[in-house]
Length: 373
Image (cartoon, rainbow, N blue to C red; front, side, top):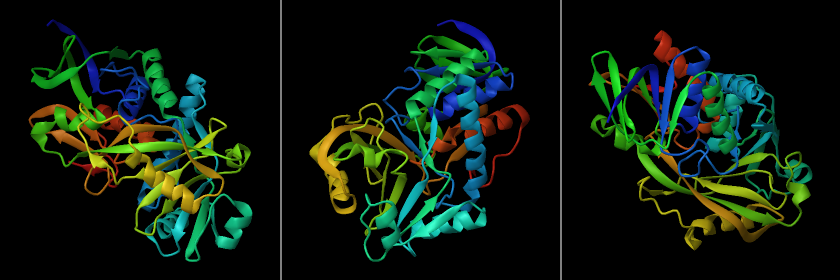
């Protein structure tokens, strides 16, 4: 196992957060080396499934909005630099009880940050977005700056751009540990030992294994996404069917997208998945996986059939309060851990990458909304 040349920053894991961090670090002129067992844009982690929601009026907290506004600019920059179509703005609907967590949170976030939005009652929804069936106690909030991202394409584009800016990406390389060295850190891999001044661990669902000694409060969850056939694809086109999030009677969340294949729409359950190990996760689709999606569409959407065109497994890596974590390893001063998406982090990936570049290269603090440990 030979020792290889050094870099300024070693990025361990090239999913959404790692690929974006590599891009933003390389754009700053840092010497970057990145590692991943799989090719960026793969379907074995958390950053896949054709579409991910982008939204700005953030019901989770208004404090996220400035980060999202910066993220939107960076998504457009990545599109420009790579000539890739990554973000489609459709507007977004948040549907639920007027005083529920979702609707009230979106309204508060929009008002606090002066974001364009409008409230729609059941009658207005029936006229404007007849695909949705609303109950008497439900309303919807439409926010202008929402849409969907293409995750596989985005991760691949960020990784390619990082390489074009001089980053060295070691694909097909398994990292087994990160150790201290006299001048920084050593990343121990299946292809040898690599030195760097600092290391950024962005390994997604594999982060708890690589950082087991830190006892970070991370839990990996198996999630299933489903694509159901629609009777009138034109009625579910991006210009007629915005992305949506809906609060259920039980307080859960379902979300969905316009058609991207001219045949089906993607609908999924947010959280509510089972605990999982990323190395042994069940990737088979079972009837019990798709029944909640079928039941939801049957009760809440017109023109969606029970035919499952496709279904896929992905993973959430969650914190107890669903916020992200930027952690330092006291036993390894040169190591920073960026995790977890908690099921809503993909849209933040480029701004998180930029924040990591500022933190690692300039010593800047991360915003208070992000856990720092």
